[in-house]
Amino acid sequence: MLQVQSKKEAEGLLNELRSLLRFDNSEEKSEFIARIDSLQEEIRDEELFEEKIKPHFEKNIAYLQENFPDLFSKYLATAIKAQIRDSQDEIIDALYPIIGKLIAKYIRAEIDRISQRVDDRLEDPFANFRLRVKAFFSGVSYQEMLMREGALAILEEIFVIRKEDGLLMGHFSLNDVSHPDMIAGMLTGIKSFIEHAFEKTSQELETLEYESYTILIFNFKTFYFAAVEKGPIKSEFKEKLQNSIFAFCEKNDVITDQSLNKAVIDSLSLELKEHFYGFNQLDK
Amino acid sequence: MDSTNWISKKIALLGYHAVGKTSLISQFVEQKFPESYLSTIGLKVDKKTVELGDHRLELIIWDIAGQENMAHIPQYYLNGCGGFIYVIDVSRPSTYEDLKTKLHMIQSMVPGAEMVIAANKKDLLSESELEEVLSSCEIRPDISTSAKENDNVEDLFHMLASKLLAAHES
Image (cartoon, rainbow over all chains, first blue to last red; front, side, top):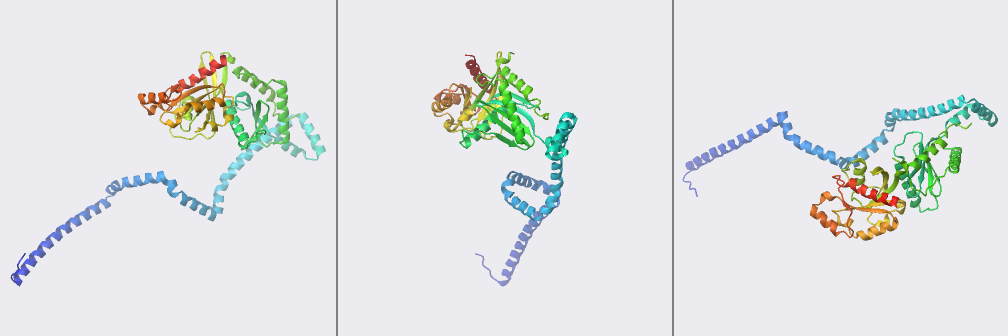
């Protein structure tokens, strides 16, 4: 233990201690200041700072990108709902031109189709005369008669499909359809599924609809016809198609109890083409 | 080619879920291996023509959603099937356990249909491990395949096509 003999000696020791402490403090202080300067330099130097923080940002951005739906979908859905609720007019204003264009495009296509059919009708003098007489006696204007006939459904393609295995037996199409045999298989799968799903084994699926197309199904014992048509279906169209199919079956043997080879399929497809080619022409 | 030698046949791929049925079809039909797994919902129909000598077989392939219990396969999907491929996953014992009963069940649903058993995902095992699995099956698979590496996929479908043609001609 340090023994202090006098006040003077104690003061001397204290001064020495102070100087020591002052020295240590100043060294630490200068180190500390140097560190702060270095950090300030790193922050001021944009390139250096960016280099330091870039990996962290990239990591966080990647994490956000990967987990965005989990992290924010709840808040986004709420925000979107609120935005739609609060700004209905603005949203309608923004969407109106886009929706309007789509509707206009659809209507234009339909009008073109109807107008084409009206032109066809006008070019046929006999049908033209018959329609005028019909209009006169029915009390419906000639113009309306023309429009009504123009808006008929169009048979686009027809398939004959074996019920047991869904194999295509024959096919005719106004357009080039790729893989009709895959369509035949899927149609059979869907048809079977629907018929069994509701356990109504005695009833059979008759119609499938998608957008402006309808698939009308005409069931026979071992095979079925699937007719794809476009446009609004009226009972007259369905009846005409059904009669045409019956007439086809009377005229041609649709034999299912045989191996399906290309010769059989091609032969039936040709018969379908001959029979249904003029189906969409207007009745004389 | 005589058009009577160009015949259509319906076949089906059956087995547990995720054994690689859709991948085998995808590799066979489109020469593609789907990297991500998407479970088949219900059914998907594909087509590929196989040439065997002077015959051309148009295979209409029904990819039926995987089932653990074969009795749950909808009968109406199997109606009229000329043949089927039963697929097992060599890395999952549950897919090839009790094979005899499962196949017996399917055969009772499609009597007379030709059958090929495919041991898929062979790329996941070594030669010796694969042999061990094949030997442990109640009925030894006809062919081991890898849809991922396109190994034996073509041969698998040709094997069934040959059986179908032989049955057709007899």
